[in-house]
Length: 464
Image 1 (cartoon, rainbow, N blue to C red):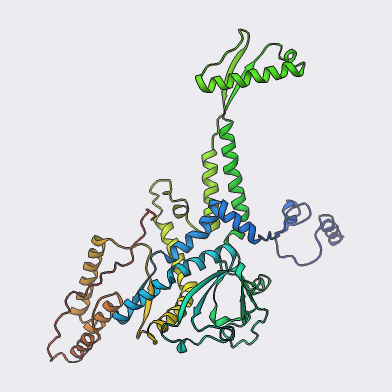
Image 2 (image 1 turned 90 degrees about the vertical axis):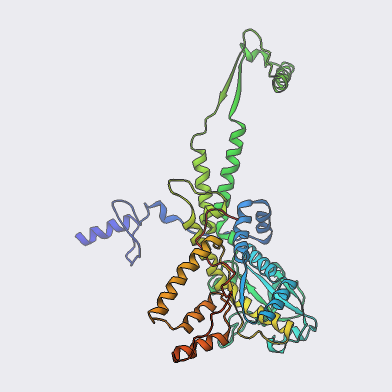
C-alpha cells in the first residue's frame, strides 16, 4: 500500500518512473511540473551577416569585443632569431607584403563573421595551378605577389570534404571558392581563421567555419544597450514643470480654446529658454519637480562588467578605466588577459605564421633562413631602470652558479643567447672546450653582448 501511495504521489507531481539526472524534491516542487524553471529551454538565435555588420558598425560594445583581441594579438608583434643580415631583409619583406596587417584583419573579421582566411597570391598563378597543392620548397625568388585577406562572406568550401584521416585537412573542404568564382583553390593555399571555435558537428552546420564572438554576446549587448538608452531617456525627464490652472477643464471645452492654451504654454516655454521668464495669471501656480535616480550608476557599472565578462576581456582593458575599490589596480586582470592573448597567439596564430614565414623567406631568398625562429613579444615591457635591475639580479645568480660549479660557463652562455644576448657559436665552442679542459686559457669575455630588447614585465594599469 505504501509503494502504491508513493507511486500515486509521484504521478500527481509529474514524476515518471525513470532515471533522471537532476535534483527532485516533492515538497519544494523542484524537478517536477510545479518547478517553473523546468520549462526553460535554450534556443539559438542565428545572427546573419547583415545584422553582425550592423552591430559592429553601430554598437561600440560589439566593435570593441571584435577589435581588442585582434589589436592585442598583433600590437607588439614578434621578435626573430637567425642570421642577422637575412633577418633584416626578411623584416623588410614582411613589411612590404603587410603580414602584420593581414594577420590583424584576418583575426578581426574572423571574430566578426566566424571565419576569415589569408591566401598567398603568386605571380605565376593560374586556374590550373591554384587547384594544386602549394609546395613551399618549390617557390621561386620574387614570385610572391601579395597576401589576400578574405572574410567568411567572400569564401566558401567547394563541397568536397576530405575523408582520409591521414590528411592534414581531414573533415574539412579540399577546395575553396572566392567570391563565387568557380575556380577552385586548394586548401593548402588557404590559411583559415575560425573566430570562436566550435565542435566539429557544429562547424559542419556552419559551412566549416566558427562562430562570431557577437553571437554569444547578443543578449548581453542588447540588454546593456537598452539600459544605456533607457538611462539617457530618463535624463531628459529628470526635470518636469507643473502649472496649476483653476477651472482648467473649462478652457479645454472647445478645440479653439485648447489650441490657444497649447500655444500659450509653448510661448511660455520659449520665453523661459531665452530669458528665464515665466508669465502666469495671479491664480495660477508654478512648480518644478526633479526626479532622483538613485542606483543608476551602479546598474550601468554592473552591465559594463557583464559585457566585459561576455567578451572575455577585463573591464580595465574593455572600458579603458581603472577598477574601483581599495587597493584595486587591475594588474592581475590585465595579466590574465595578456596570458589569454599569448595563448591565442600560440594556439591559433603561430601555426599560420610558421607557414607564411616560410613562404616569404622562399620568395625573398629562394631558401629558408637557417636556425630561424620567432617569439611573440610581450604586451608590456620593462623600462630601462627595471631592465637594468633585472639584469643585475640575474647576473649575480649566474655568477654564483658558475663559481659554485653548478653550471658550466658554456651552459650559461647558451641561456644568455636564448635571452637575446649576442654571443657567437665560436665563442660558445671555446667555452665548452674550456669547461672540458680547465688547463687551457679561458676565452676573453664578449664585449657589448647584452640584449637591447626589453624583457617581459608585470602589466601596469595604464592601457596604451
